[in-house]
Amino acid sequence: MKRILIVDDSPLIRRSLRRLFEERPDWTVCGEAENGSEAIDQAQKIHPDLIVIDLVMPFINGIDASRALKRLMPPIPIVMFTSFADPQIKHAAFAAGIHD
Image (cartoon, rainbow, N blue to C red; front, side, top):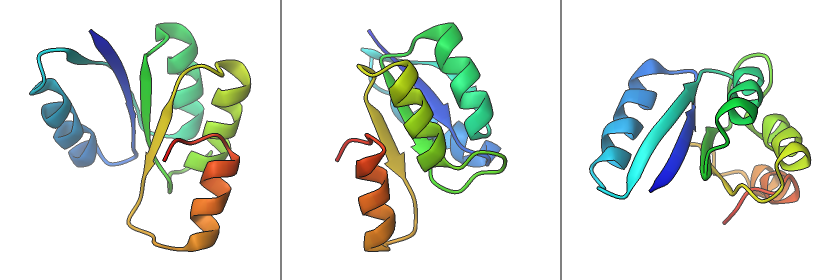
């Protein structure tokens, strides 16, 4: 079973992603966080198999949170989603260890 941590400041997006992921019988959402700081705390507590994170969030954005998560938990893949199509953001995300 793949355990997923969802990180987004929008409760609507978190609910939608949860429904989408849990349609797969081999996936489960093991936690949610609404900002980068909570994501770091949750990931260390629940040790997910995958982290799905938004770019723009309060306190710690998705890139900075991903950079910290990769230092703390390097083997956990991180997938970032955003509505921004800026190539600099994509480069920064890859540099932080986010998967393509």
